[in-house]
Amino acid sequence: MGAGATKGTIGAVGATVDLRSDTVTQPTAEMRRAMADAAVGDDQYGEDPTVNELEAVFAERMGMAAALYVPSGVMANQLAIRVLAPAGSLVVAGRRQHVVAYEDAAAAGSAGVQLFPVDDEDGLLDPADVRWARDAAHHHMPVPGLVAIENTHMPSGGRWWGPDSMRELCAAAGDVPVHVDGARIFNAEVASGIPAARLVEGATTVMACLSKGLCAPVGSVLAGPSDVIEEARAHRHRMGGAMRQAGIIAAAGLVALRTMVGRLAEDHERASRVAGAVVERWPGSGLGQVGSPTNMVIFRHDDPTALQAHLESHGILSATIAPGVVRLVTHRDVDDDGVDRTLVAIEGAP
Ligand SMILES: *Cc1c(COP(=O)(O)O)cnc(C)c1O
Image 1 (tube, helix red, strand yellow):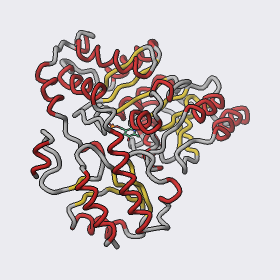
Image 2 (image 1 turned 90 degrees about the vertical axis):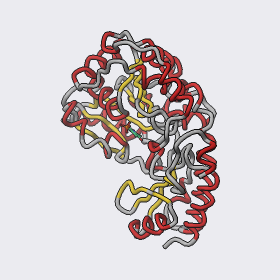
Image 3 (image 1 turned 30 degrees about the horizontal axis):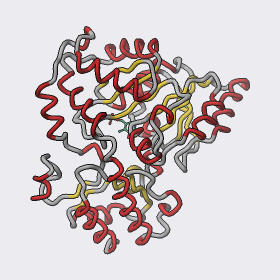
């Protein structure tokens, strides 16, 4: 408990090690101060100086012309799909990606598109699958309107896409726009040592979450060309996502972008330690091939319910992301002591 107090945040309650997600991170003391002091205005009139600054800073970080602050990553993804993919078109995406598996089928309802899920077992899409979807349009199949990728790709342990894979994908997409679900694009930046702007080169849009490993309490940002972002702004309003004095929360987002990116390296190091223990305990869990390139440890287990109960008896919270697939996520509110305890619990786990 003492260690939690020195961090200056509320942290995980008591001795609980919460490895369910990096979304559980608490805002930092600096964020809370920035929120209290934020200059604000009515964002729906474009008059919130802090929101405007956050959008400008993010657009620049991504090497794009403009950006839009939104309440959540799901809304950012759905806005990109709504603006870029015409109703009745295909959205080509990895079958385990967030837009396919974890957005409650939003794309079908809000954009009227048909998802075209392709293999993403190792985290990347095969450019041949994208080419196939484009060719298929000449054989009575629907026309692709968008290709969506995930960088980092969560279900593959947080694998990142490098510029070469990205270039090949964009070449295969041709004139079909590419959207990067970069909920954790800064984990990719830190793990690869390559600036995010280079990682998203060739894409039309990119979204990033400020509320995960970067510890902001709320919010995501969508960047792209000015005309696309203006259209997304109109759709944000239609979806009920236009806010008022949102500078209060955007202020924490600015602190996230300016001060919280570098420390993600610590999360990656801790995730590798956890991954090492998982591979040792369950050599057949599938983790050996992919490892944990960033902050996610994802592996198969025959009885996740028993495993989760065992971990919980050690004060460790875990998650499942699919039947028989367990997830452990490192983040700022999990320290070395928490990892040590996790390793002990894994050693004795069913
Ligand atoms: C969390 C997440 C989202 C959605 O973000 P929310 O803020 O939870 O709506 C989208 N894509 C990926 C890969 C994510 O991990």
